[in-house]
Image (cartoon, rainbow, N blue to C red; front, side, top):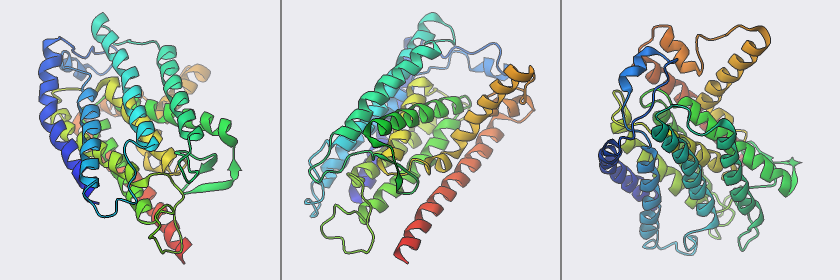
Length: 365
């Protein structure tokens, strides 16, 4: 537990004090966020606010991972801890960094061209596909010494569903789909000051708890005597990385909350989504992530519904999509929308954690 707390604390401190450095650097580079003219007019006042802030909390998370392992080496239960970096860490941090890199390229083009378009949708999806596919292969085809892989060949809810075994190739496809879906879901949620950051903190916090709970009831722990254990790979690594990312986002939120001094940009949004999708696959909670990340799903579905409705009937269901902009045009203040959406995100996380724990109780019973 100490290593997880250390990682979260170090990430928070680095992000809290590192983000102002990023603000000064990106401001000096004139890396201001281009604002769409078709969006809510209140956003025009944000023109020039530096973007690409996701760089700050991605770096903070990676450094905190190292700090967490420094703390871990002082613990007596070294027989449980593997020498870093484990394949789980490489996959999860790889998703965070490389999905963030796709977003960074998108942000860079927006700033360079002074246009909100950036990468084409096809190019962005191709980048996510390559990252998800490459790391998906590593997650499914590189087993540990006990034969456990980062991801499973079975579709999972709270644990693997044995009759939904799709094989390694099928699981890589599922892996890519989850990464791309969650990555774009967080990206669509980003758009109001602090909205995606706060929601991501709640989801990452949930996965830190799930990872640590699995570590305390882990089949790979030779000292565990319980009646039921979780067949996952490197659960302590999962908890450590999720906690570090959550702590880094809390530090970033200090500067990203309304009125935002810096935006995470696609750098942060795509990176966070990729990491959350990876956490879902690594903890064997793929379908449960739909509930835990319920806010991202709701906002994504608002875009899907809007597109389908407009293409089939020529009418819009919402004033504007994603959903948060519908409420802006309805007259809600930005702060009201953000706080209320955080409440929705918190409810979804609470339901997800409740289902996870109730399954454990039912199994123990």
